[in-house]
Length: 147
Image (cartoon, rainbow, N blue to C red; front, side):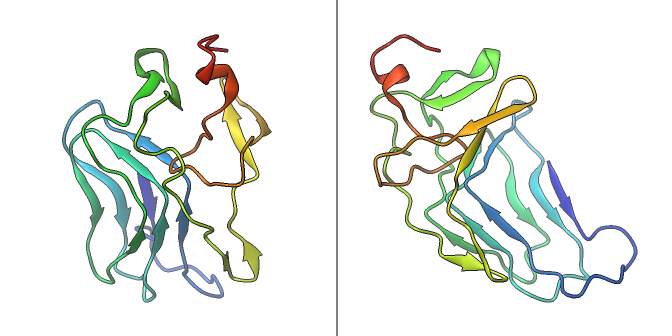
């Protein structure tokens, strides 16, 4: 789903990769979520991501990703995964399970926006506690209106 530095070497100043607050869904049930080329010399920062469905989280494993507060369980409790609505339902184990990701390469890694189907974005809501994944649990889902 994510392929980084598998192409021939480029002239990038560095090869750091920050994968923070994403939702990866693999309906196939096998494969690799993050394929990282061997040109990577620094560990990958992979935090507060959901890896739903079967498969290997990262390959190759050298250098090893620095995982923190990721979710790879069998049921993250999405609103409607069949129709690509990956917002968390009440009671989801990803709600308030994240931590402040700090910064990387001088940039804040705190999520401020989220994807809106189809090809848009919106300000990411929140109660001061960060959820794991691409979406923050919100009152629309909590109240059962769906959105």
